[in-house]
Image 1 (cartoon, rainbow, N blue to C red):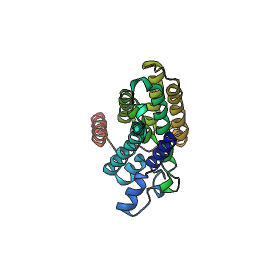
Image 2 (image 1 turned 90 degrees about the horizontal axis):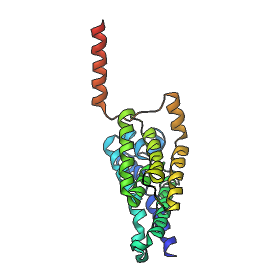
Image 3 (image 1 turned 90 degrees about the vertical axis):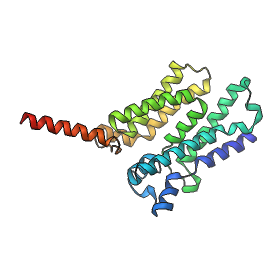
Image 4 (image 1 turned 135 degrees about the horizontal axis):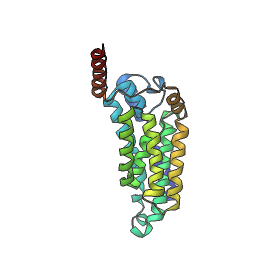
Length: 225
C-alpha cells in the first residue's frame, strides 16, 4: 500500500511541467505552441535561450532524482541486504516520474519526452553509470550539436554499460536498460527522420567554435584565390 502511494506521488512530482510554467509565468505564452511543440528542455533552450533551457533541464532532472529517491520513506528498503527489492522499487518510482513528465496531469497530459527526468532517475539509482552517459551525451553534442542524437546515443550507451561493462546482475534493471534505449529511440522517431534528411535543428551552442571554423574556412578560400 505504501509503495503504491509513493508511485502516485512520484508521478505527481514528474508531472510538474517546468517549461510550461516558466513560459507562462515569465513570457505569457505556452512553450508547446512554439518550436517543436515539446514541453522539454531542448525546446525551451531554442525558444527561451540557454538560461531558461538549462534551468528547465536541471529542474526536470531533479524531479527524477527526488521521485526515484522516495523509497527512503519506507525504512525496510534502506538496508544493504534489500538491494534487489530497493532497486525494483526505485525503477517503479522513476518510471512513474518519467510518465508524469510525458503525460503531466498538471498540463493536460501533454509534456516532454522525459529524457532529463529519466537521467535524474539513473543518477539516483547508479550515479557512476549516469556519469558515463553524461560523457557520451556531451561528446556527441560537442561534435554534432544535435540534442536528439546525443540523447539517443547516450541511452544506447546506458544499455551497453548495464549489460556488458558494469554487468549488473539485477534482472529487472537489465530489462529496464534495454527498455530505455527502445523508448528513447521510439520517442525520437521524428528527430531520426529529420537527422536522415539533414533537416534536424542544431542547438545554438559552441558558437565560438563554429565561428572560428568558419573564419579558418574563409581564410583558406581567400588564400587559394
